[in-house]
Length: 306
Figure 1: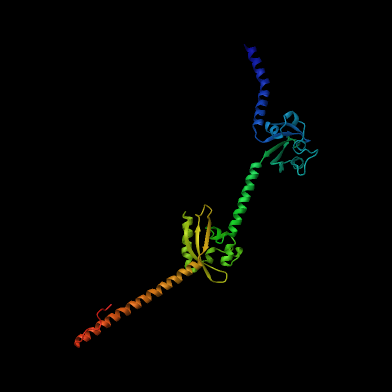
Figure 2: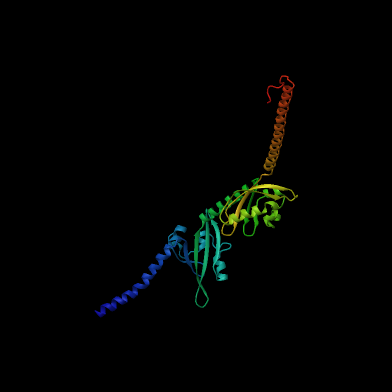
């Protein structure tokens, strides 16, 4: 019984390296990026399934070859090769490059022994084509948005409610108020607001910091030439950093038209009241004439006082 137990222990010890190796290879093959181990000459010692799939070759045709031979079809490292750089720096080196229709991120990590000598390297190729396409789409969307913002006739700005300063504005601000972007961003925006409108503007900013968006708000901003223009604002709620996005429309002409209309209405009201008073006086005079005629024993002259 004791002898059998000893044989079992011996067999288990023999199996452990094999089991460990199999487990390592399973883990190695489960990595989605193409990974291989390199010797000091850049030759591939071992690779995972993803590398076989990437190169469309079995491991037997990959082992012993170099990255530049298998990927680039050259007999020497390409310009900027991270393997060459890693040998000089003894640290991780990377390279992003396009191969055919794919974008690749190549990473090479040194393997250094206890004495500080470089013994081998881990070479990883990650397919970042989708990320690159997403980045390109994002850049195109940002460029399109930028062009749109630049041609919008109204003011579009970004501000920090904590500091009270705008941090970005589109060209419309210069065309409306006359200040350059640099001049406008260099000072707190409240300094550009008409003194009579400053407190109401501060109240609106405080509402934003408390979580209320600006649905519609009007105030007057000074122009570089000294005159004032009426602006109608709409803005977002301030985020945790106090950042708000705002849009303003120049409503000076509308306000002037409203003012002129109100003045005209006031004139008409004054005229109406004056006319109404005069007509009442005419009626009174007609009545007085008729009364005098009656006293004189004569017929009334006016039959209708209205």
